[in-house]
Image 1: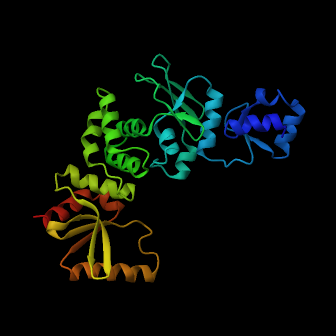
Image 2: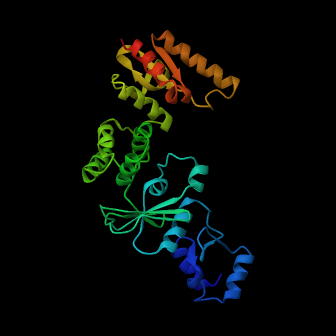
Length: 299
């Protein structure tokens, strides 16, 4: 690639427009670059990407931002992915639309692979992340949580804190700024319970079930040690000697892991603890029985 074009491409995070390329090369040379795999097309016409750059969401966002032009800012799930607290799977994120924010007078536009939203709060607080202007972490988390399903609100806040891109104080401040917007009351009510120690979204969703059922607030990642041996519980009520664990699909893949888990369970039993184990089916479909089971042991 021509040195001047390569310098521009590097400065723009691996993306460039056709018009930018034609400043330093001919249309035939650009076609040659594409044919030889030096660069490749993106989802947006006239926008190309350096083949040496990883084809990931930040690259897609940079390409989309270049195609959109103007003072548009990545927001919602797109910004969450850039800040590393997106709840979606990689496959879902790769196929979903990208979301951008514009001025309040901007018409809500649905473009191919893109959704552009007007913002009553403006975009003056935008922060550069992975070469893309996006909403700050706490604002992103609150924006995403406001429109999320109720079961995903706490998981969104927990994951944002776990990413260490924002603090609980930042979330309180973002809620105050968004006061009056739809869904923000629900978010603000859960911010006091948000905790970056939650190790998975499903663990957060399970904890949310207990909170909305008005059970005592559990401790996260509670550690119990005896001698040289210690173990940790996802959720615990130490005063009741009750622990709750979320078991994912990968929890017991081998005989060795199963044996270690049973040994761990027996160790807690010997220490006078009761352990309850739940899965995604319990959290989503059988949550009434799950909550009732925990409530029974909490008296």
